[in-house]
Image (tube, rainbow, N blue to C red; front, side):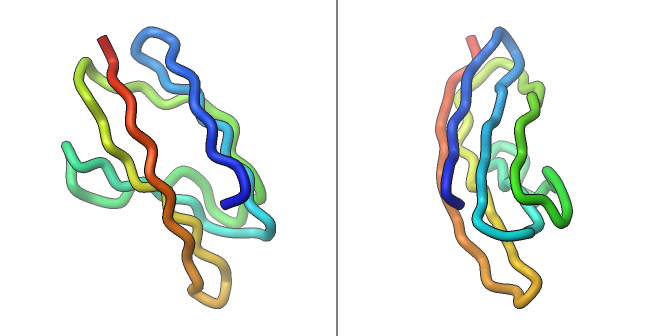
Length: 79
């Protein structure tokens, strides 16, 4: 993961994620403990996800075709 930025807009979080090769991007939400897909075979992700009120600690995972993965953490609070 070469870039991981986020911006909160009320209940939506706009993610801007960049990677150096085609990967599958997933995130793990500690408040709902399971991996959720952001995109498959992508080189970037620039979309918004909706969240309920609360504090979130997410793990973003990028996995390449050889099953190598990179993990980054992001935390935010929705008021």
